[in-house]
Image (cartoon, rainbow, N blue to C red; front, side, top):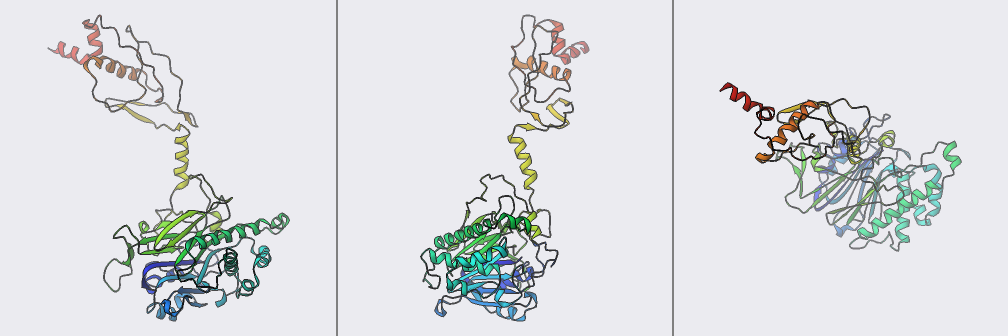
Length: 478
């Protein structure tokens, strides 16, 4: 699988500030990809690279393209060009081939007119849908495919879809096709790919062990708007990783010429720069936002919008957890990394553990600890609970007899309330006494309220010594 980068800014930026210099630049990802776990290649994306960028409109609306089969880290011309070339819209791509041979025709990005396209992932069951895909295309799009990658054929399908929507991809509108049109064409392209993979006969799927899951991280631009997707044709699996960052300035932390520690500055609420990348270009996690799986990201005038792609693979449950096993088998990882892993720029959260705890809480079950403080003066051990979950609603126990005319039971829960009025001190004292007697009872026991004991014999010395032993001791001592 591949890695790609998108830059969209209100001002031109040197390619070297994105391609060469950052701590985890696209050049470094070509030999040190942290979010790709392909055991065949290690951390390398060495099957060619490409950069595409838009120049002065006076030179035409078509982007300039530079591709090579040389590994990006070993290309002297890339370093020469990137250090002297600036643009406001840049695509960068390093390739790890899955389909197609090693040739410049198969290097991303691909272009047609003012449109530029690149892809990270693969089309599910590609060998069995390639013919069907070609049959859907008009002749000019079919004959325009020069390479052998599924990515370029997907671009041809996008161009055909755009034309069927009533917009000629060969024309170059002064202000572009618009984000709404590009987004609709992208969603229809994905829907058609899913339709073709679903049409593969069941016998072939079983006999040939065909996997129809597609990883479709696409990026397309008309020179004005940018559309990116993070998508997988599955409701159970995570898509390949994708992040974005926005701010007012992409700059180094210091003014030193040797400083490679770039960061995204935010001086106000607006955004002059938007970056989209398969892997973050820096290790400052707070600068990067995870694009949700099966979402489409739109950049128009430096404004970022993220919408879900609602189809049969869309999961409405916000707590739904997807598996990353499929993307790892494809030599990728998803965005969900362990945040304690310092080697990863993205970090992985613990969604499954948090979700399990959340669901326990929402279903009304608790796992009680070994001890619990009931008041500042009382601490008792709870009895061990049987394995399993403890329901919240517990039957009310029988009142415990005491040698007094009235009976009271422990309150349901202790809370930090102000000291009760003097007339309630007896109730409070007796409650503490009963808690001592009833050690080992369940913390969730629900106690019914009782009336305050009769006060007829309140002056009885025995009663005084029972409820206020410290006073009795004090009187004896005197």
